[in-house]
Image (tube, rainbow over all chains, first blue to last red; front, side, top):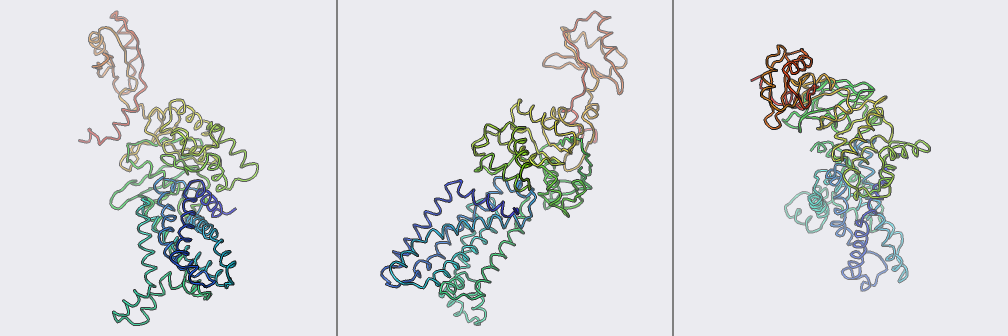
Length: 245
Length: 310
């Protein structure tokens, strides 16, 4: 078994060894349900799709994913186990990847447990299941990007609260960059369209919305892949710089 | 084998380790002594591959800790300061994780696990989560983790810290039992430990090696080396007799317990002469001892910015 897989297994098991996992999953399911039915008007819309469900994911993730990500490295540094981990025969890349993948898989499990809403919409009507599948994929990719940002910021501090707040702020900015209001603001400043597109292109929201409409554009997948890769690479650099203190 | 050449570590302007060079061969147990903040842990962290040296080099059995980090890490068993581990895991789960990541499999894996658990008497707690264990047990879990893959090189940062005297005794026994074919570095504050387990001691302070010798040779640097101490009813009378002996450099009386200590001139043995003088003067002593030298005194003398330099 590769070191990444061993680390992945250990990490994933550790989520379920404490109440963290269960609390997270329950809150995630409750909130996503509440948003869909009360704020999204799932029934009132009278449409057989999951737009009201997925539409709230970016905002749900904004607070829940930093809560998962904050412990990734801050906790290792606080308890000193980072010293143990990095003196085992694993490379920095394997350690970062193993921990990230475990957290991502954990979010994936929480996301998969929303399946009753998919059953519901299929029972009530005749939705386009291709679009729903694409939306799930888009949601998972966006979660990965949030998580990668959180991984990097968690490595900067040994204080989990600081890690949480930094991640929320960073992710908020990355979401906001695609918001029509924000883009209009920049447009009002008289910036050229190219710059506006670049700003909106940086946003999670733009790419997530594209995927969740069922449009599988390679560029959107590439964007999330690149985002995750970039932030994980940044994580390895931050750990290298900060592990001494 | 461990070899360091001019090893340096800087944190900004602070030089934590300032050009340390030494070589430790298999069979040697090197005691790393020094005041807090002397650079002991930083040196060990560099040897274990956690910190990157700012300058100089270190190699484990010929593998440079930076150039071929993975090979070096495979050969090392490392107990970090404070014996950190993953608290939510069970002892067995944790050790199995270490075994997996160390690439132990099949029969070897089971045998090594049994061996480590047995050597550190962890049988009774293997199913408990590490968070619920006492400090002593946590330390032993850390040690079990370090010896699990039967490493050629052991780096132990304060292995007996937080253990009770019985556990200390056991851990020292463990280190001695493994010393035969391994290279071991142990850092400690406890000087008696150097006697108990080490056959070589390095004293470092302010990031530099100040002494590198066997524990016995270090003791010989003490002014108590070959001194004679005794207790008798009339300490002052004893002193008057002893100062007249030619090879005695000085006689001191301890203000607290009235114990008399006679210090020899450099390189002289005075035990015989002292006994002789006491007998011929008809002085009864309750008890008399030949001092080996005091490591704590040598330690203080070496590590405190010297008076003789002033």
